[in-house]
Length: 423
Ligand SMILES: NC(=O)c1ccc[n+]([C@@H]2O[C@H](COP(=O)([O-])OP(=O)(O)OC[C@H]3O[C@@H](n4cnc5c(N)ncnc54)[C@H](O)[C@@H]3O)[C@@H](O)[C@H]2O)c1
Image 1: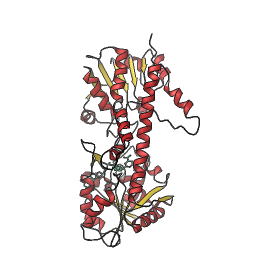
Image 2 (image 1 turned 60 degrees about the vertical axis):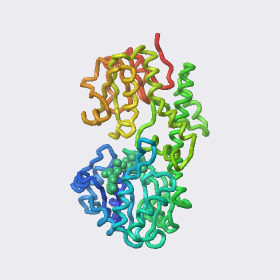
Image 3 (image 1 turned 120 degrees about the vertical axis):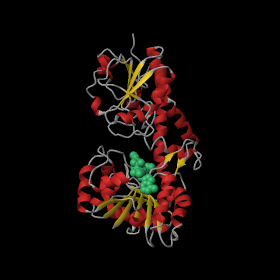
Image 4 (image 1 turned 30 degrees about the vertical axis):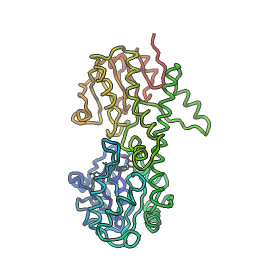
């Protein structure tokens, strides 16, 4: 098969590479010329994506994956088009479809009769049918008659995309009936795994939003119960272990909030326009309030934060992945600064410019002599941290650090839903 993948970013590139490695001819289309050139040299732009480097070098050398900025010409050579262009939220919390709409315009101009278009990007309900398909039809072909459209969300974790591609069933739903059926056939042929063919695109869109809303709300519940635990001096990690020891509870972990492209974003697609889901809105409020709660908890130990030197370590949204979208590290920085603290940022996965772009003053190495340290994303590179010389107080934003070793160094440990041990 000849497949065009539109958007060869964190998701699109591993997807394109995996399809090419199965013997199909893939054209990866992107407006980012530097990325196109890098991929065509066989160089991996996403080094923290497991297995991608080796596979990418192989498929580029074999000629089964080629990158291009000429989307329209590439689409004209392909029977299947996958869209993996990112959709984020704007300042009002509404889906910003501008990049995806531009991609549709480029694709529409190259569409041929019989082409199957599949949208992989998570979308508000109804977007595939009502917003994107009409843009594709502007090329002159009619959906369900001349070409086909389906929605099929990616259910992948950054860092292990290639493994996840075949780990869970692929969910598909068509805008036209043939679109759903053809998309299911495509994924069975390419990945060979299970495919859930749903009634239509809207069902598939809501299934992905439901996965995200479930996780965001579950974390919000954990965050609220962790505050109850704090009020009563109870260790919430013990509570989770006990409650989850029967099959009906699946409590997630509390922390200083939820980051990344996905979980904090998708509930907003259910709040704005395509909802309304008042629970999703409430979950967002609870999770968005966690940085202020965490900083208040530190202040309950440290007293006034005025002129305190604070270092926040691990600025990415989760450990060992160099992605900073919606990272709570910036929210924690804002909360500390609002109380007069001087905040420094450190992350071995980011350049100094990357640290500055998140609003931080880069922390000079070695890290020592602060009043307060925050372990936000506990990267493997922090495993040998000398807690004693770092700071007398540690905020463990994700309850990820070994508390006993921190306290054995004489450092006061502050967690979320963890009792304070202070004399
Ligand atoms: N990142 C995740 O963990 C994850 C997980 C599951 C699903 N998803 C879905 O995948 C989508 C893509 O996420 P990502 O992390 O790969 O984003 P990304 O920003 O890494 O990649 C998007 C790519 O699209 C390119 N692009 C922008 N406009 C374009 C256009 N008009 N034509 C061609 N290319 C264009 C960009 O240059 C970029 O390379 C997300 O919106 C989300 O719905 C992401």
